[in-house]
Image 1 (cartoon, rainbow, N blue to C red):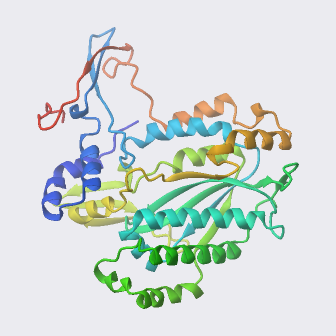
Image 2 (image 1 turned 90 degrees about the vertical axis):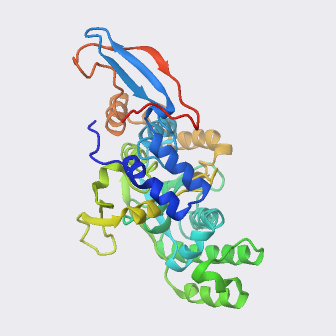
Image 3 (image 1 turned 45 degrees about the vertical axis):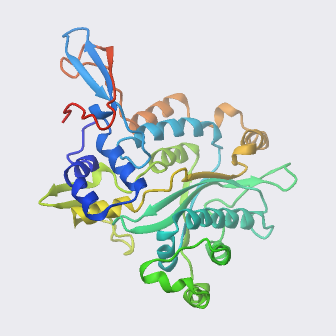
Length: 397
């Protein structure tokens, strides 16, 4: 796999110190910057491999494993994908997205843990409730949800992506109930219940004193001002949409691998870094039929700021499972689903060759063969220790 011409780590190394001095970011953002900067450098240690044919010595440095690091997500994606393979079912898979209005995104900006948690609860309860309704599917569904907090331009845009098998368990657990081909649940019904549940939860959080208001939103600390701010949202249509179904488990597996472990921006989208500015590729999805890539240039400070606002609170889970895929009873209910679908477990997954091809496409190949002679095999001959602050590591640039 070829190395991108520009990397987020390089931007942080070049402009990060000036940004830290000028803006004094919070500790959680400082940790992200530090992790990205030292990822796969001598600061984290590594190991040395020697070619058995030409005696070339190759040095490999360790990864930071931070969930905000573009370099580390391929490995984490592969691990997560391996764990998910056994959960796939031989049915259509649907993709449902829940987005909150800009007015609430502003509140979420200063109350991330509270509002992101509400977003997960409102979205999951909406899907589970409408799916259980006999007027719709009348079944217990299972799905996983992924939080994304960014748009293509790196602005704050919190939304939840849900991947749902097309059907569920009947109330008596004796039948698998499939949805109509190509159709999951009515979007307008989902939107209105999601709106009600979310606003009720935000009202409750305000009443309990859990929300903080800063800057231009400071006046919302007053109860009447807060109620007036939310009033227009109660009659507004919220954005909930269902994308076309993926198809079967093979297509769902591909989606899971490519989508779940994204960060705000990948290194591949970086186009140029020069003269204190960063240019990156983006798509404007607000205009239909105009999804061609564009280039956006930002001052380095603004680019770093936009990236860091997507730092998640420590310990916050951005991938969660619900319904019959919830952790506490996933194994038992998946076995029941397979039994009711009358499909052997071996047929629930793509075959071994398909999995190998897909994993090879999703993850970079480990460097086993010598990069110099191309024929010899690298044999590990030793380890390089990580350094401890404030000791300076050797230059690995």
